[in-house]
Length: 310
Image (cartoon, rainbow, N blue to C red; front, side, top):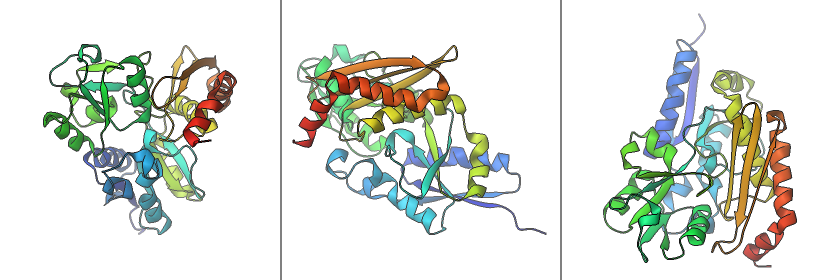
C-alpha cells in the first residue's frame, strides 16, 4: 500500500499569513482525499525588522527568502504569498504555480472617529507602509501628516486604537479575510487610490521542476484573476517595480476585455503620470509592458532617475 500524500506549506507566522496558508491547506486537503497537508510557520527577516520603512531595508523579498530556503531544502513543497508582497521578478529556480481567486483588491480607510479621508482635519496623522499610498495621500490631501506604519495587521490596528495615528490605510483583503470587515470605514475606489499590483490575490510559489507540486495546486488557479495580475505585474516590472517606487497597477476583466490602469509618482506626490489600456486577456503581459512604455513617453524615467539619486 502506497504511503499517503504529504504536502507541507511554508508560511510567515503573522495571523493573516497563517490564515491564508490555512485557507489553501483546507482546499488542498479537500482536493486530495487522504493527503496530509500541514503548515510550516516561519519568521522572516521582513517580520523582524519593524523600526524602518520596508523600502529602506531591502523591499518585499525580505518576506519570502526564508520560505524559499525551506522549499530549496525540501522542508516545504509550496509557499502562500499575498501577491502584492512578492517581488516582480521571481527568483531563479522558483515559479508561481497558481494564482488564486482574488479577494477585494481595494485600499481601506480605517479610522475610529471619521468616516472618510476627506473628513480628516489639517494635521491629522495617517499611517501607511506603502510609498504608493503615501504619494497618493500627499497629492490629494496635502494638509495631512503621513507617517510610516510597520508591523502585522493586528499591530497596526493596535497603534491606531492606541492613538498613535488618527487613521490608517490598509488592504481591504486582509481585514476581510480575518473577519475584521467592520473596521473598514470606507473603501477607496481605484479613482482615488489605485491598488498595488496583485493586491487581494494569493500566489502559490513552488520550486521549479516540482511537477508534482504544480499538479497539486493547479485546481486552485483562477485564470481570470491571473490575467489581471499578470498585466499588473508586467506593468510594474517594466518600470523596475518595487516597494521603493510609488506605483499602482490595477486590471479588470469586463465583457471579455482586459482594462489596465497604472500610475507612477514621485514620493511627495507632486508628480504623477497615469495611463490606461484595453485589450485581449491573453495579451496581459504585453499590455502591462505597453502601458509602462506609455508612461515612459510621458516622462516616467525622470521620476525614476530622481528616486535613484541620479
